[in-house]
Each structure stands twice: as structure tokens, then as C-alpha cells.
Image 1 (cartoon, one colour):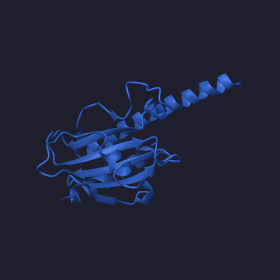
Image 2: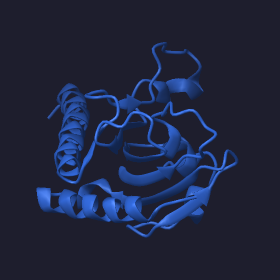
Image 3: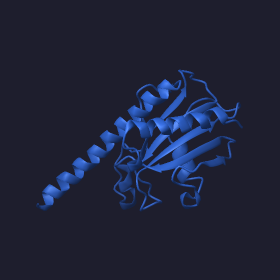
Length: 184
């Protein structure tokens, strides 16, 4: 295999990672719908990429999405004060050896806050406002109240842990339990 073949296979692997991750989000859509939750913004996924490719060597990470995420509310409630966010975090520039993670979360929003939901919330909680190395991993639950008084309940699992629909169904049941019990 020559170097061009290796590059072509690498690009194909990245495309497959993104496509399979989108299929996994759709599996979450299906299971969460059965439990009474629907995507807030229909079929749109949140992500963190840049529309401009900067020529600064430290900005190369803007080409590939750091994550894709979907926000859910109780069936089509657009102004809910409790939301679910599922984020597939592919990498983070502060965590060089991060294996792709699924971050499952329930966010309780204070009554005083407007109900515009942002796709980056849980990624910021995990990597910007906390030290990732200090957070619980492997499905153990973290609870964090941020400076805006949002209660963030979240946990990490390795992406490769989700191999079949039963894994997603079990994760959704855990999310539902945390959603039902969450309050500020």
C-alpha cells in the first residue's frame, strides 16, 4: 500500500466515523421518541466547526467538527426548562489523547433564562468550565451548577461502547431517569 492509498483510507475512515455517528444520533432519536422526547430543532445537528480556514498553525482543528450534538425536549415543547443533550465529542484541543466520547446530559435551566438552547452547552461544561481530567468517566454521573445557575447532569461513555440498539435503549432509560429526577 502506498502513501496515497493510506491517505485515501484515512479520509474514508473519517467520513465513516461521521456517518456512523449521525446514524447513532438517529438511533437516540428513535429511542428517546418512544420515551416522550423529541429533537428541539427537528433534524438539525449542532457542531463546532469553522466556515473559515485560518492559516494560523494553531487553528487547524477548525476543519474537522469537535462534536455533533442534538438537543431534545419533552414532546415538542419549545420552551422547556429541562432539556436533554446528546453530544458525540470526537476530540478536544485540550485533550490530546481523548477517545471519541458520547456525553449524555440533562440540563435544568433557571426560570429567568430565555429558552434558546445552544448545541455547545454540554461540551463547554465538560471541557471549558471544568477540568476534564477531574470529571467522572465510564458512565458515572457528574453534577455541576454553572455561573448562570444551570444544573448540568452529565456523564461520559466511550463511543465504541455503543454497538447495538440495546446499548442506546439502556442509555436512554438512564437519561429518562435523570430527567425525571432533575430539578434546581
